[in-house]
Amino acid sequence: MGLFDKFKAGLQKTQSKLAHEIKRIVTRSPRLPAEALEELEAALISADLGIDMTAQILEAVRKSYESQGTSGLDVFAVAEREVEASLGSARVELLRAPNGPTVVSVVGVNGTGKTTTAAKLAHLIQSRGQTVLLAACDTFRAAAIEQLKHWGQRLKVDVVAGAYGADAASVGHDAVAAAQARKSDYLFVDTAGRLHTKHNLMQELQKLHRVMGKQLTGAPHEVLLVIDATTGMNALNQAREFNKAVPLSGLIVTKLDGTSKGGMVVAVQRELGLPVKFIGLGEQPDDLQPFDPKAFAQALFARQ
Image (cartoon, helix red, strand yellow):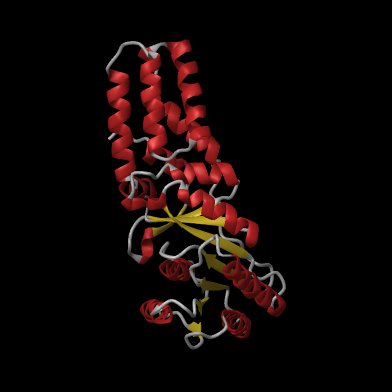
């Protein structure tokens, strides 16, 4: 299955709802009355594309209609073009530290799929022929360490872990030291889920990053926020607050296959200016895909 087909399958709930609504609106009248534009606006907002992106698409649709009339108006093509332009055309790859291991901290609120995402990132790095280590720095959630160790056994990736209740910063320090000693290409750090509104938990995360940075200059080189697509625009508030506490370098959007609000990818990237680096389209290790803006835009506005 090609990348576009994977994106289309993963975005099926969002795409099918959008396609149905757009077809219903544009085929009902030979003209494009204000009522139709209002319905189109509602359809785009319901997919969580955000107010700014929706306004940009509507303006482009109006201009296309004024210049070509309905006979030459292709709302799908216009929307796809505007979304792709907003996202940028290039993929944004994982950073690679110039020397030593690249440390990637995986952060987010509870339940977004951080542990699974860290493991899938490790699998991706393995598939590229590079070496990888995992760090179990979620020392509070029940079975979090066992979950990561299970993934490690499945993928044949070593996991650095401490006891439950251990200081996450201490585990992070040991993991960075282990990655340096083994000359690993990447270290993925699974952090504890924390509400973005809890100041003390954000301070703990800042401490973890400080300690890793003392062990290895520049660490963590990437801080990737995992957001759950099914939460829609609530993810925007999470991203804002995390970015204040621990400056983010990118986003990973999970559970896109389970929501009709896939447009939130566009809204979050547009507002925060943070690149979406990966999206999760299923449960298997290969279902974490590098984000391709063009394929995403095409899949989001596919006609069927």
